[in-house]
Image (tube, rainbow, N blue to C red):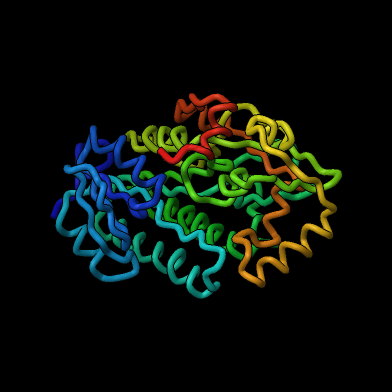
Length: 314
């Protein structure tokens, strides 16, 4: 099967299409191009013209998907974010699976590769500058093992960018994604009483899942390549974000909060590992000028709509 270069009307393959973000992306892109979704989960509510292959990206069956369709672009959303999964399971899925995907992108000469990374790869650090550029070191794994795999995926994509210039590789690093997604930031803001850390009120950047989909749509265009920080509306202090939700909050000392979270984690009474506390303690904000200038991306959702989207299940 011949694969059209980026910019021609071949199919778009989306890994992790059965996640909430993947479904939202599919419903946007399928109006423009043939969409092929790869996910080991079922997709019972998929649009009729979307092709869904229930395939584990680590298996050889993935190669058959590439062989059977004229694919011109790949969007990789298939990252495992389950904090309860073992480090071995995370690595096998996130890193080994992505390496296999890169192998097929190179072999079939796919013209466009988009990888959804995260601004969390930079890591919340007390010495961070106010805004981090795309050239900042990726220190997010220093205290949080789950982020190490994401950093490795990001670095594999960077290496692929240089080794395979025939593919327009795009790495997107969005700030905290809010909406119907079941990720740590959205789950945190859904708590009936939101804990904060006594003496800390960091500035926080958030982005609506719809705006992330729009950034991906813009990145699909021919000729776009490189690493882009993706930010939403202007940042706010965490306390202001909580006020937008009209929920009570309770400040606790960091040492107490960490101890309690560790205990609750060991009893399987929470899905928030203690290292997540660094995100409500230290600043990790990004400079998104490159995305605005090259991608032409600007968030359309207001800060109020973005924050309140955590209560939406649409």
